[in-house]
Image 1: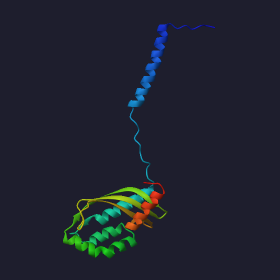
Image 2: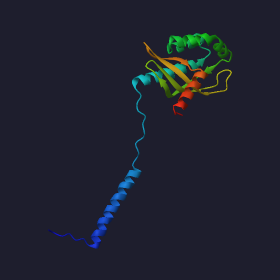
Image 3: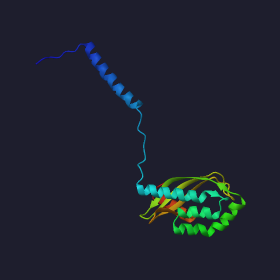
Length: 180
C-alpha cells in the first residue's frame, strides 16, 4: 500500500481550489437570470370564455352616438346571448337618448382580471373597464365590473352584468372560503 503525503503548500492549494470553486458556484447561482414565473396557458375553453366577456363588454361601452342606436345594438347583440341582448334592448332607448344629447364618443379598453366561478355552461368574470371619457351622468373612466358569459351552440357569448346584490353575495362567499 502506498502512502500519500501532502505538503502544507499542496494542502493549502487543494483547500483554496475547493473554496474558490464553491464561491464560484454560489456566485453563478446568484447572478444567473431567474426564469420568469409564467402563468399556465388557459385552456381553449377558458380562453374562448375570456374573449367573449372582453368583446361583449367592449361592445357595450364603445359608444359612437353619431352611428346610431341600432348599429350599437346590432354590434352588441352579435356578441351577446339572446337574453343578454333582450335585457340591453329594454333600456336602450333611455340610454341612447342621453348618449345622443351629449354627442357621446367613448372607446373602452377591457381587461379580464380573473374568473370568479365556473360551471360547464356559465362563467362569472371580474373585469376592469377603462373608458376614454366618462359616460353622460358619470365622472368615472375606470370601473371594475362582474359579468356572466354563457356557452351557446355558437360558442361562448356575453350574457349580462352582475347586479350589486349578486356581487356582494360573491364577495361574501369568497371571504367565507378564505379568498381575498
